[in-house]
Image 1: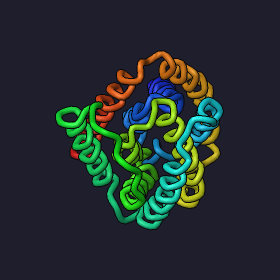
Image 2: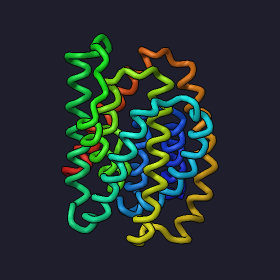
Image 3: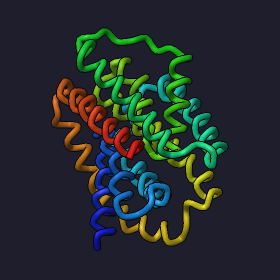
Image 4: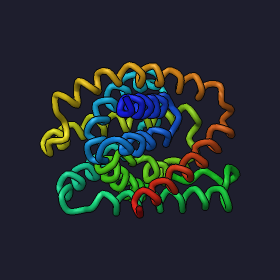
Length: 243
């Protein structure tokens, strides 16, 4: 019973993140890790991410920045490849702490110094390749590619719906890409797929709840929620990696 409560809650977090509430999906693996090992949780939830991505793609199929999307997809592919190649070499706890530190530093800088009044940063290829690669790598290891991705994309000051759409499409791509190495590493099984099929129901419903919340939230409030959520989750990741 405890397993299914945690699993359904994690699926709702995944669905709401695909509906446009960034970062909250990163809580899914920590929640599942309360009842099963983290790597098992990541493998179990990947099909739920992929199914939820399909709903998100329908909702935001017209809202994205093509240049940013292509750049990040190329870089994230490299990051997934590095993650696959080093899967047995890099401790997951190290990656967890790294993601948490990056996200915390960015969020605090944004809150304390720059805030929403900062001018939009120009899109540059080199930083995009760097942060996109980090995002792909950390997404492969622990489904926590959000903070590095946002390190690059948030300062570009995209509109609310374009930011959400670009994020949704990029991670739909990278989650589908991860199916191949996850299968090769033995993290996907028929049992996992059966459980994921059940969890797809609450996750799918949560996608539409997330879409609705994005539509009603004022844009300034939306990005404040993103930043504070990023800070909260990043601190949680640091804690998880150190204990």
